[in-house]
Figure 1 (tube, one colour):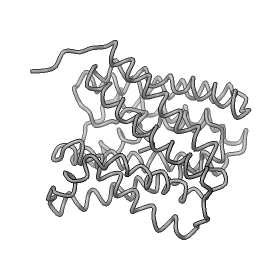
Figure 2: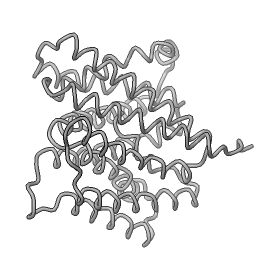
Figure 3: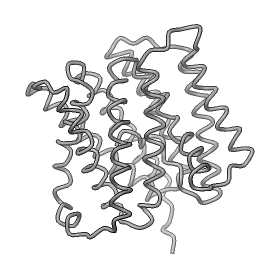
Length: 298
């Protein structure tokens, strides 16, 4: 029996999700400037493992088939690389641009689901993907502005996270949500470790405290997002995720002296419209391949 939908609760939980993830963004932007991206990402995930302690016994007691172990490891590596590039991008380009390009994740998942999972790609979905990619062109405006390394990092980040979520689909079908989330945290921490140690600099107590705060907000964001999806369908909660763009622009302007860019806003709106259409179509078809757009930072 399908549980009753509670749209207002779903919307409120999703608003809280967006605020938590913007807090993650602000924490990284503020505190990670003096740390190598790989090390900052590693500290965030290492410190975040404390939130897995309540379910650690269950995780380690579960015997996983070799196939799933391999897929968990592959997902962890993809996600680790994506997280490193995201941390790097946060120190290079404005928050609003990082947030806008984050919305491309569902687009890449849609393409990957068609290529690797055989999911049909109807003409309307192809059109939505093309529109989203045009939105990226509007943001980057190659030839009219300098495309910085942070922009390239965000494009690759979205592709890597897309691959991570494609692997999450079959793993979620065979394992509990606790196992999928717990294994992601563990494998990403292990995947980041060698990269972090190569560039390691001794962090200050303040930097460690900030990374712990980032981990706490990220955990709270994933929890509230789960509650949102339990309360209401994705067709209701998905549009609320785009409030993150508003928070990002306000945060960048008020705290980091990043002036709003009209073309970034236009490109973000184009991508948002495309992703909203994809989410609406999937809700109509009762599919959940494409991840919700805030689920990007791991």
